[in-house]
Length: 494
Ligand SMILES: [Ca+2]
Image (cartoon, rainbow, N blue to C red; front, side):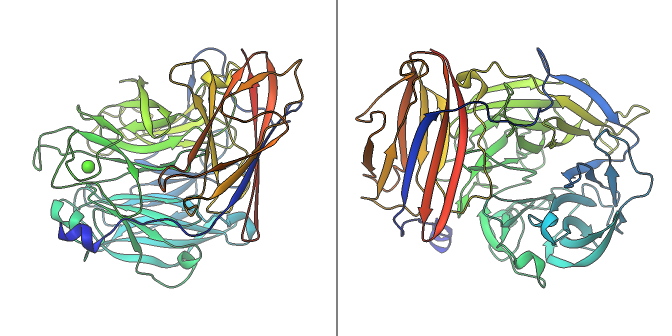
């Protein structure tokens, strides 16, 4: 396929790295209390009277910025109170699904770069604009990306910063599928602007992934850093209605639109999850904060499906997919984890396709269910304080066949065959050796594991509790002068 030759997949492989894992007993981790409910999730309506709220981003002071598709950026307090005066009003092209769409805060917003990035349809194109926040007001600062073709449908418009500090932008096919495979246009793609470049003059973005129809939900899996995006499947005029997707986005990936849809993607990258019956997935968010049965799971907001879907992963695979709020609040658009651990979801009942009630559109606040204290069912949260990229990822997950905790240590993508990873596991017994280990690892001694295949970057250590106890798993990594250190707390039960 000529296109594949022109657009090869990124290949990692250069630097050697060293990583060590130290397991030791530790008292509590001293986290601030997060919003967690007893029993099931607790849902309340905290904001009313919005018009097609499209995206949410939380400010360092705990308030939120919310875009309205009609062109306003609103300020919402942590308790849901809506400021009467918008932070900004944009003149946008009110054309079908266009308008003011995505919103993201600069990763250095609190460190002297108080910029907000917005996607909006302006005139006959879609742009990514940069705005500077001064007090409670946004002032236009420049255009980062222009020239994204606009149609009445399939604008996409999601904008998010990845863990690598780059700006990622979703663009739709604007109603014409072949654009998704056409490298001369920016449509039907995931675009990437490298760190820092988004603060300068207008850029030509990197094309990060292609073959997407209308990708509207971006999120990165905690620990692994895997990048997932939702995508809307065909809707009658361009194929049988249905087959919405969750895609694992990799650099250079081609997701097949408009050539294929459904489960069989041939030589193109197949979805990680498929909704054969349309849900029209928009927002996507992982629950990253600890202490909930939802921790490390993902939430997908469905427009036409009028549903929030809760996805459970095992590595890159979706192993459970449960509907929440089905047909209760109507069309759901944005989903975002708040700093206090609650989940904010917006309705989209005034977008011309819903049945609004008087108080629409609304922001729902969902308090996730508290955890059981068992990492096998709760998932585990990672303390990630700005990690260098590339960095090793640690993802504990349930073993397929035995009741043991698999700790997967992912070497950076730059690790090559023969690369050695040093691991030391140390247990201060609680009360006497709370874990059993597989392989040749033993407590308190250094072991060296080597990568044997380029793609086999994952080293799996089974930690099987034989007594209850709390352990802290600590990963330290040094690479070319960069230091990396993160801890996770494990409550182990036999
Ligand atoms: Ca696809």
